[in-house]
Image (tube, rainbow, N blue to C red; front, side):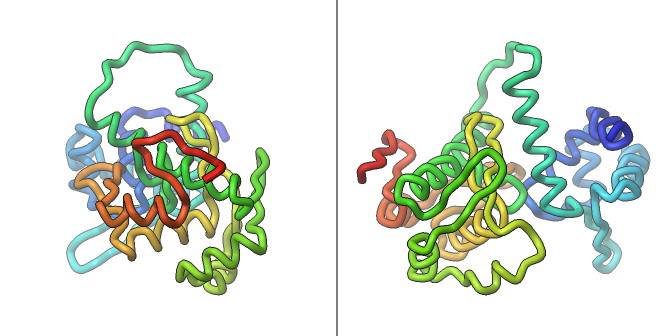
Length: 231
C-alpha cells in the first residue's frame, strides 16, 4: 500500500493517471504534456507506473500507448478523489467551465459519473431496477428486462471477469454512481446510441439532443431539472 500511495502521490504521475481515467490510451508524449514534464522525465514516471501494474503498455507501430491496467485502478483513483474532496483539507479553488463540465457528466474509467452517472443510478434504484448498498449491487429481474428491451447484451456482460454490479462513490456528487459490468455496459450503450459524446482532451462528456430525449424516456431524468422518483 505504501508503494502504491507513493507512486500516486507524485504530482506528475497523479496528473497522468487522472488523464487516463476515461479508459482511453495515450502516448508517452501526450502524457508528458499533460503532466508538464519533459519526455525523458515522463518515460521514467511511466516505467514506474507500469512496473507497479498500474498501467499497461500497448505498442502500435512506432508508438507506445499507455492505459490504466484495469477497472480496479480506475475505481481506486476515483475513490481517492472522493476522499480528497470529502475528507481532505479545504482549499479555495475558483470554479472553471472545465470543472463544471466534469461535474455535470464524465467517465469514471468505463462507466458514467458526475450528475449524469448519479442520476441514472438514482433513477434505477427508484424504479427498482437495481439495489445498491455501500459495498455491492444487484440487478433485479425488472432491471434485467428493461436493459434487455433497451438492447444491451447482458449475456456478454455476465461473462466478463469483473464485478457485475456495484456502487462507486462519486467524488463530485459525494453519492454513488453505478460501476461494475452493468455500469460500463450502460455507458457503452449510450455511446453506441449517440446519446453522449466525448469532450476533446477531457474526461467530460456531453449529452446530445438525442441523449436528452432518450435519457428522459428511458430513465425519466433530465439534468436541467430535479429528478422526480415518482416519474
